[in-house]
Amino acid sequence: MLVIMVYVCIQPYWGEGPFWQDVQLDRDGCKTVWWTNLLYINNLVKSDAGCLGQTWYLANDMQFYILSPLIFVPFYFSPIFGMVSAGVFLLVTSIVPGALTMRDHFPPGLIPGQLQGNASSQGNFFSDYYIKPYNRMGAYVVGMLAGSFLYRTDCKLRINKFLNLFIWGVTTACALAVLYGLSDASNGHPITLPVSALYNALNRQVWGACVAWVIVACCTGNGGFVNTILSWPALIPLSRLTYCIYLLHPIIIDLYLFNMNTVFYMDENSINAVMFFLGILVVSYMAAAITSLSFEAPMMALEKILFNRDKKETRKDGAEEK
Image 1 (cartoon, helix red, strand yellow):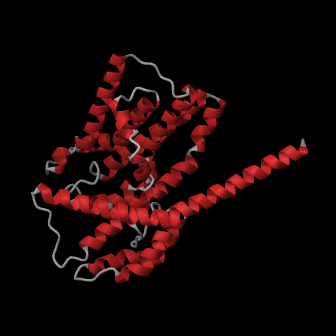
Image 2: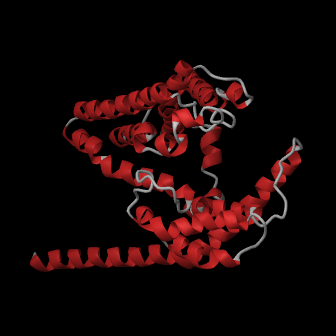
Image 3: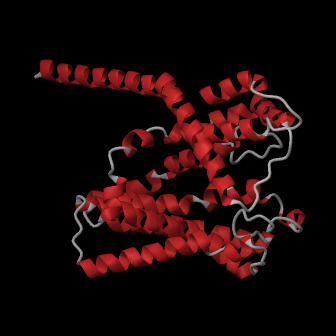
């Protein structure tokens, strides 16, 4: 909400130019639908207006969190009940995306060119399909299963070297298939509807499983050099800025693009893309660091003080009763 308030109040003074009015649409949307962001339902409420488009995934995360007891509570009573509950969620979040893809002729993801030409017949792919929680929760469920496994095994998993390498190989192949399996579609070659449905039904679960294996392997001593890289101390302070960067980097991109006097054009010279990426990355980290140190870190410190005080008072009362 802090980012929304600052965005609405200060954004008009950030720039000018022939394209700047396009940014005003998002700002005006924040004035009318800000409450959907506050309630984490902006991915469910259909509206012509929008507010900070990147926040749709925050709504998904909150909705997944609210539904997570339906999996964790059965696990508390029995691992079998928990697996059945998780299996039902995985089944539903696989069938629904595939069925919607077949019914509405959706493409396999946000691919340039695939939405053009038949967009009117398939509706608004982004708002009607892409951001909906029932199409995305599969990866979250896989993550919960991985967390439950680590908890129950106390992060202990002994496997021989060859099996470890085999699992890493399969994981790498699956991850590359999810990332680059649609390269033909990105180059303008159409993909058949059944293939699109299969990809939409399984890609998030498969990707979640790949990420889950990286976490499990690193936590159980089977990560090798991957664990060494991910455990590099220099990444710790950067990791604490990820949430702020997620909120701020689209605003910084808009600030750059919509202040231009001509249309931004990314040619085939890859150095331009690299320079653009690095520039946005550095500025985003700078803005995130300022925001985190000014607002997020003080609030977290205050929260820690308040909760620690409550714990101390509880312990003191318990000692006095004894």
